[in-house]
Image (cartoon, rainbow, N blue to C red; front, side, top):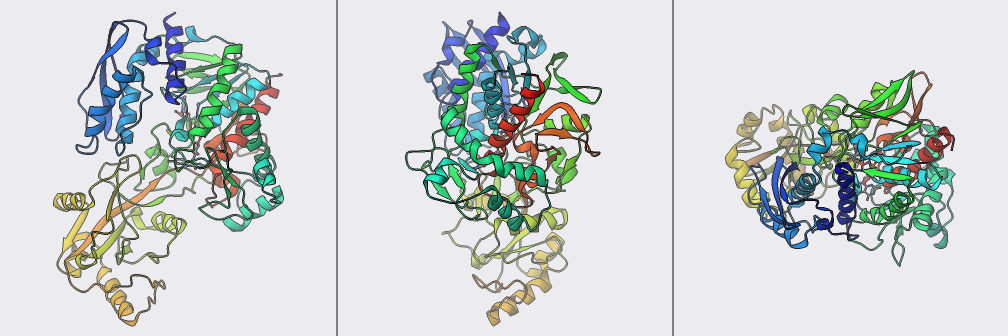
Length: 598
Ligand SMILES: Cc1cc2nc3c(=O)[nH]c(=O)nc-3n(C[C@H](O)[C@H](O)[C@H](O)COP(=O)(O)OP(=O)(O)OC[C@H]3O[C@@H](n4cnc5c(N)ncnc54)[C@H](O)[C@@H]3O)c2cc1C
C-alpha cells in the first residue's frame, strides 16, 4: 500500500510538474516531518518538510553552498510558493532556475519518501507484467513507452528523477525531419535523399552510421506527424518552419513545438506525451515509476533480459535504454573528450546507459565527437555557472602558450568548439586591455540556469580572488603571470596587423584594435557541454550491436544516447536532438514489441 501511495504521488507530481493540475496535497498521506535533498548549482540542497492537517505547512532549507546573491530569491521564494500552491508546480525564480528546481525536487523527494522507497523493495509497486522495460522517462523514453502501449504491449517505465522529462524540460522546441505534413502544407518539396545529402554536405562526408542515418531520414517525417496527429503535440496555430539556426539545411525542415513560444518549447512535447501515457496507464498496460534508478542491466548469454533496481530485479523480453547523453558525467567526458570541461546539462544526464551498454559488450562510435561551447570560467568546478564573453569587442583568444586560436569576431559556434577541443588542456584565455572595456557589453555572464550576474561586480570579485582573472601593467608581466611564453610575440604581431588594418593570421577585420596601454587582463576559460554526440552502436532496428556486428539480444536504444554524430556526422543541425527521440523512440518500440512477440 505504501508503495502504491509512492507511485500515486509520483504520478500526481508528474502532472504537477507540467502544469496539468492535480494538487500535491491530494497525495500527501500523513502528517509528519519529511526530509529530502536534490542537486543544486553547488551541491546538495537539503530540505525538511512539515505536513500538518493534511497540508504542507513548513519547508526549511538546510545547510547548502548555493551562491549567495544568485540563489537568495529562490531560497526565500520557492518554499513560500510551494506552501501557497500546495504543489511543487510553481514557477522558477528568474535568474535562479537551478536552485529553484533543486528545492522543488528536494521537496518532492521528501514527500514521496524516496529514501525509504529505495530501501524497501520497489517490486511491491509493480502493477503490470512488462513486455518492454523503458529505462528513462525523457522525451525518448516517453515516445518509446507511448508507442509500445499503442502497439498493444505492456510497458514499464523506470525514471530515476522525481519527475519525467529529462533535458526536454529545459529545451527549445525544435525538431527536424523530412516529408512531414507541416512541410508539405508549406509547399516544400523534400525527400529522405535530400536530407541525407545535407548530412553528407554539412559533416563533410559519410563518416557516420550510414544505415542508421538513412533510416533516420526515411522515418523522421512520419515521426513528427505521429507526434502531431496521434499524440497531440501542439505545433502552434501558425507553423514555424525554417532551415535551422545552427547550420542551415535546405530546404526548410525544422519545425517547433509551441511554435511561437520564445523559449521552453520542449515542454510542448511533454504536455502531449504525458497525458497520452496516462491514458495507457489507466487502461492498465503502462506503468511509470519515478524516483527509481535502474542500477544495472541483467545480461545472460549475451542478451539483456531485464534490469536491476538496487537488489531487486525485473525482467522483460525487451529493454529500451533511453537514458540520454553523458553530458553531466565528468567521468565519461574526461575519458573521451576533454581534460578540462564544465557542463550546463541537467544533472539527469548521468550517462548510466553508456555503462549498461559497456557491460553488455556493445561497440561505441563517435565518442570523440562532442560539440562544446566556449568561455566557461570554472569557478564552480564541473557545474558551469559563469561564462566570459568570448566575442568581447577588441579581445583576443589565446591558448596556454599565448598563441591566438581563431578569428575572434567571425568564429562560429562550431569553430569555437573545435578550437577549445584542440587547445592544450582545453584552456583558452580571453585577453584584453582596460581601454577596451565598456559598460555597454557584458564581459562576464551567468551560465544558462544560473541567472544574470552583475558583470563588473563579478569581474572585480574574480580579480580579487586571483585565480581566474589575471591583471598586469605590461604584456610581459601578464605572460609571466599565466605562463604563456608566446603571448608577447602574439601581441606584437597583432599590434602590427592592427596598425596595418589587416590581420595577417586569421583575417579579422572587426574590432581590430591594438593592445597599447595597460593594464592588461587574461581570463581563464574552458569549454562547457549541452549535449553529447557519440554513443553505443546500433543497427537500423535500434538494436544494440557489438564490435563484431552481432546484436545484444533484447536491447534497444532511443534518443540522445544514440549520438547525433552517428546519425548526421560531425555537425549540429537544428532539431536533431528531438528528432532522435521521436524517430528512434518509435523504431525502438516497434522492434522491442516485435521481439516480445506482440
Ligand atoms: C538547454 C537545452 C536546450 C535544448 N534545445 C533543443 C532543441 O531546441 N532542439 C533539439 O532537438 N534538442 C534540444 N536539446 C537537446 C534535447 O533536448 C535532448 O537531446 C533530448 O531531450 C534528450 O532526450 P532523451 O530522452 O534522449 O534523454 P534525457 O532527456 O536526458 O532523458 C533521459 C532520462 O533518463 C533518466 N535516467 C538516466 N539514467 C537513468 C537510470 N539509470 N535509471 C532511471 N532513469 C534514468 C534521466 O533522469 C532522464 O529523465 C536541448 C538540450 C538542452 C540541455
